[in-house]
Image (cartoon, rainbow, N blue to C red; front, side, top):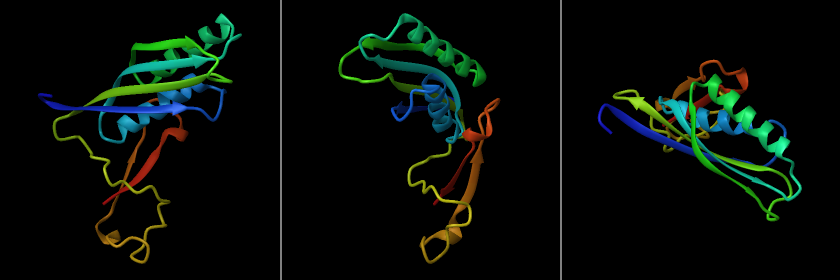
Length: 150
């Protein structure tokens, strides 16, 4: 992509039904943001069990749109389906973003540690490791990520 790098992320939200729309946006936007890219476009797949009311689905989309506004991204597509294959709502989000030329931070080989847990004894290249912290604009503290890049 001329002038930058297109970054994509996808993650399901399966362990909770509370705020799944918001969590889907924040988790995927965070994955894009830690690469130095600005989250821009979001696609969402929503699977709900039979008997789910229209109000539940509307509320889910309301939370998705509100979370997208918080990270300045836009809903550009997706799929919604009623299926007996799920017992509770499942949301799978995909976020796309752009990293300006020279701002992309590759995440291949990222090791997720507590800030004080890396030492020469447990990581052979600890002396070459940098701590990077990225926080989404307008997001709460739960979206802050620290990664040690080798």
